[in-house]
Image 1 (cartoon, rainbow, N blue to C red):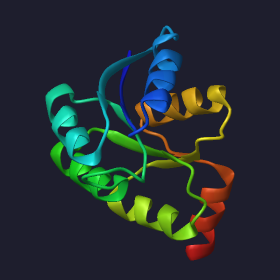
Image 2: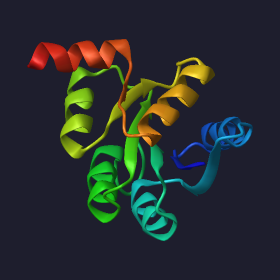
Image 3: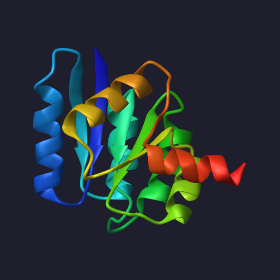
Length: 137
């Protein structure tokens, strides 16, 4: 069972992602947070395997929250799930320790597969973000 935490400041997005994840046999939501600071606290409490992290949030943004979650719970694998299309956000997420970057417009099955991949130690970069990182090398 892969333990997942969902972080997003929009209740609808958070609850929809939680329903999607809990509707599977192999994934379970163990925590939720509505801002980056709360995400760090909940990650410490629940030690999730995978964290779905929004970027644009109050109190502490997703990049800084990713950095702090990875430091506090080194086994946690963070996937950024965002509406951002900025290449700089992809670079910043990778530098903060994220193992994936997906658009909120992604197919739900692709999100679930990304969680599974990250949960077993893989990465979850969508095509666009993978190309951005590849060009940087």
